Length: 444
Image (tube, rainbow, N blue to C red; front, side):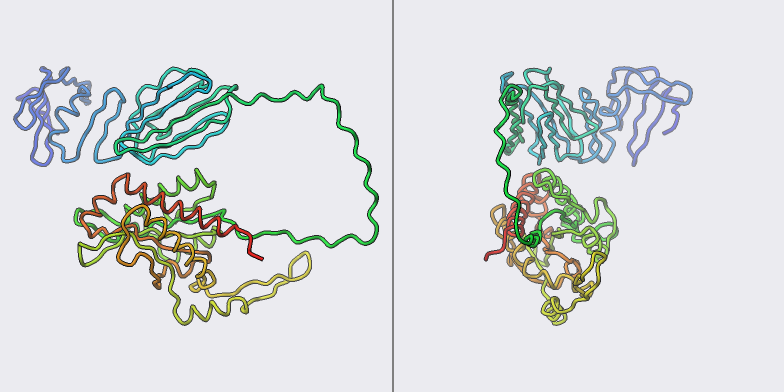
């Protein structure tokens, strides 16, 4: 940018394209074409002030990245980011009070509800909210804002636990909220006290031995591993889509869905674009005491015709098979403070998966079955392979190749909210099934 004495204003240059703005006239020349502005440029000291429309009318035509100015929302959108238009309305005052949140375009949403509020989070980079309606019925306040992607609905003291449902069309996602009255509390202050129970006779003989606590495996913590990252881009599609980006997008959506609906703690091996080695990924899972490990990737092939989702679990080599057979026998018996001893399994770090291959096979099969319901599968939908990132995971583990980026069709589709939402839902359904399998009591 430089002063232009001839025009009495400034000249802005960008990659051979120019804007000439005058300090006297409400107009500017953009690459030789005159555009009008609401007001002239103003100079205050060393600063220049231009009307907001200068961005859309003058800067946007010469810039090589899309610029969208939304005055009503005070949003300036630069680049191809996910912007959700969010409209909230109250359909019935009730009770029950019914409200609808409409998200355009169709995007994945997650919700949490209790007796005091409803939170709806939209999987977008930013939301463009319409002004919320005035409070009515059992709803005290509706808050939306561009600084967060969450719509918060505060309920009043008479509200019961709300019911929330979500429907998705090709154009939008609709969240319907129904808020009933809280159930009346029963007044027991005047009720007569229950009759006293007769005293039980004192036990005779020695006390029976205490029963051991039943503590089977549970799904309390899960690790999601978005593949690659940092300098490691992974597969690159014909249009430049990177595996590391797609894996992270899907991982974030899956994390939100699991935490919201299952209440399971989710740990990510990376939540940003950074390098993480296979050993670090396994260490994060093992040190987090995770009960399940899932690695997310996108595939590539020499032929652009190959497409579809594929699921992998670990194939053991000879050393791994020997470790698997000898896991129970390879123990250290250590004393504990309270007396007695405790057996500790000893197995090399890089063979930790050997003890979990059967459970990993079950989890991988469930993933393959659920993902097949959601979209096309690859030539070999369920495979075993000696994958380094799985070998050191000391818990059931699987890897999902969500699609082939080398297929132009799949590179395009895999970036859509609908396709990613289907993948996330399929993986989520498999996790629900595996949790039921993991926590079911053993057959007698």
